[in-house]
Image 1 (cartoon, rainbow, N blue to C red):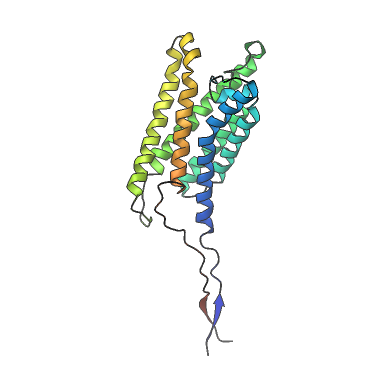
Image 2: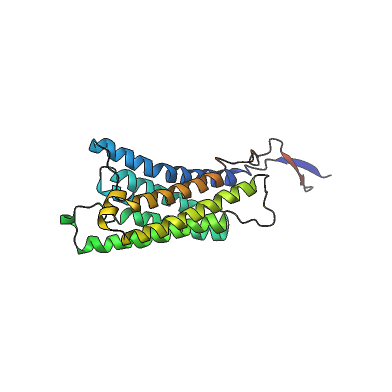
Length: 239
């Protein structure tokens, strides 16, 4: 006579919870970074000085914070797993973030200390930073808003999609504005610091999009699937 054996189904929500936390971690680092390096530099210098760029904080007392934050963001992105295309893009973005952190820009550096190697490394920094922002814009414009069969769409999905697209286009606009800033007179660039503002807009937009995707804001208040507290019976074959 067949009998039943009680089997614990396991923590079915753990993967979803991990993905959500990784998204929030990326968003928190992105939103906090420009404020932390700016305020921290002002406190260390004893006066408020607008950085030439966020990356320029590498040449200030906030270097360790800048490098550590980008490396943490890179690890979060590399560890992020969702769908195959998301995995590919996030792994590439994470690798680029780490390269950007470890290859400093020459902006903000003492010109007397910059040699040919520093210039080359600075160019690697610029190319990788531009590629990173393009990928982050792609997340906002292409990956986050998409829906596929089987997706659990909440009532506020449309609102979230609009936020993703706004953030994505803000990143694109920031990339264009930053690239175009070299056309401005040197005096204007030194006063306005357009690269800093462009990077700040892009980083904040990127962070906001990931916070939304991580359900930190504009969530539907739908809890993740929780492990069942009641064990499911499984038929046992007769001995």
